[in-house]
Amino acid sequence: MATEQIPESWQKVLEPALAAPDSRKLGGWLQAEEAAGREIYPPRGQRLRALELTPLEDVKVVILGQDPYHGPGQAHGLSFSVPDGIRMPPSLVNIYKELASDLGVTPPDNGDLAPWARQGVLLLNASLTVEAGQAGSHARRGWEAITDAVVAAVAARAEPSVFILWGSHAQGKAARIPELAGSSRHLVLKSVHPSPLSAYRGFFGSRPFSQANAFLEEHGRGPIRW
Image (cartoon, rainbow, N blue to C red; front, side, top):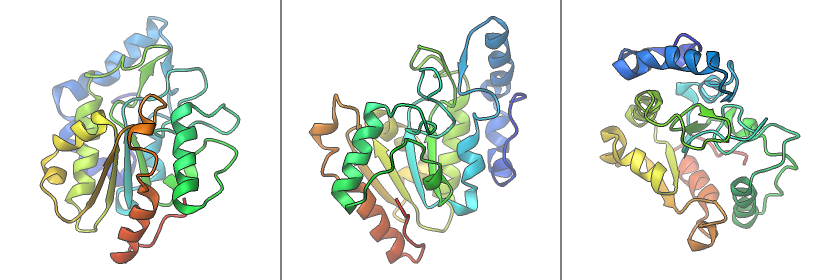
């Protein structure tokens, strides 16, 4: 991972994953892709932003995504989030609709979810980079070992946390992680993905935000200001 600096709070728990062969090749492969003229999102310096904004000891909620948005200007290191000033993707529009229905919260007029991240919501994608216009293009290139280790590290902590798994990909990733799959300490919320293709089949009405806050308050961790 020569191209990015692992935030200090995550370094120790990620050391074994970073030593894995695929992870060791990842930085060089990304550099080669960029040298070949391929545009990679998000840009360098933002690829580990989820870990930077949400230190391990502060994590209360994990929201798992698949890979970054692959359109210009969209990806900035947080799953489902886009920078202020960028048009909100349909999945995020639906997330905000469910938030309004669930908690009566008036959503912000932008798609930047950094305020959630700073409160302990780890907005993590399975792959932390993608080639422009090519969804899923960086799957199985080494990111999975690192992001699996991130989820496992949260699940291994004594503090109860909430894992929000939208769609089969997130649910499948969580099922591969023994520390989470066998845990009775954490709350795991599952539904279909908020994409317009599936949201009406169980995402709307799933009430993840109120359920997460109720669990966090019950366990003395304090609610998220969604």
